[in-house]
Length: 431
Image (cartoon, rainbow, N blue to C red; front, side, top):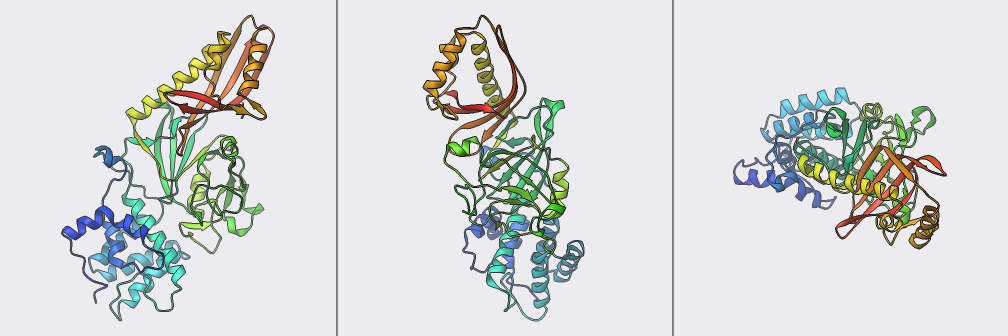
């Protein structure tokens, strides 16, 4: 018995391959989605973002999670091999007995033995909101499995990791995806793709502003703690890693709230819908266990973006070099004791604590007047571009300051803002 209408693999297939995922994401949650529409995503082989830049590089395809199995299941459905699709679904359920999406697919396949069905979640008593959630997960997983960045492109945000930062995390909330990158020291600290994972974000999307808005923040954060399962409610699954939200830039922008974590799923749940948390980034327990092995408290950056920007390695190296030159010029001008030249690296909008640019300038002029020489050394430099409308980078380093009357060592964090064609420091303080 056929399941739905036969998909015509001609011009229609090409059109679906190019835009099925985007159109389905725009559908209201209550609008039924056909099995064929999901199959079109599973069969599509597209390269978003980088393809618009003329790239035809090989794709990265991760084997993490059930994406590959789901792709094969929907391919079998499209080919009208429903018995094969059912066997694959049952295999998936043996691996993940509490995977609700797989249970829904199995129900559809069993129902198809009795009657033709066109909609996803065709059982008459299936709750519409639950089916919509599972549909959204299927779309997100299938699209992300096929829509991969080219292998020679990297997230724009990972400009430089300090040597002891072994890994970095980049989250794309629009695609419900977490990307894990390694700090490839053998290649000059170039980010190297490791794996990607399906994630859940806030119920009301991204760009968190206030406490309780059920949104996930966008910005550059760091893991601040490792909370084991034994100390947590079951909601958080196998563990949790709090992030330093709100950071200094968030506070500067008037953003509030707290308690943004990376964490797992309840013990009776394999995965949650794409939008289901109160603002946290949620992985399956299986994926969290793998990712957790690579997290370093106080070191691992977690960059959350609405939609990840990708750069070719050449463009990435160019941006990195430009910023490193600006940072080194700031260091050299501080050493020069030419206070006016040094202050040109600071924005008129600079503020740190209660001190604004005018107060900071007056203090620096007074201090430098008593200096006969200054030596400044910077080690363990990291540079991460902040996702968002304004061009901001987060710079962190170990600072070794020495002069004729003062020696001081500290870990410093700066926020640099592009103003016109120059990068200017808008905040600095201890990290």
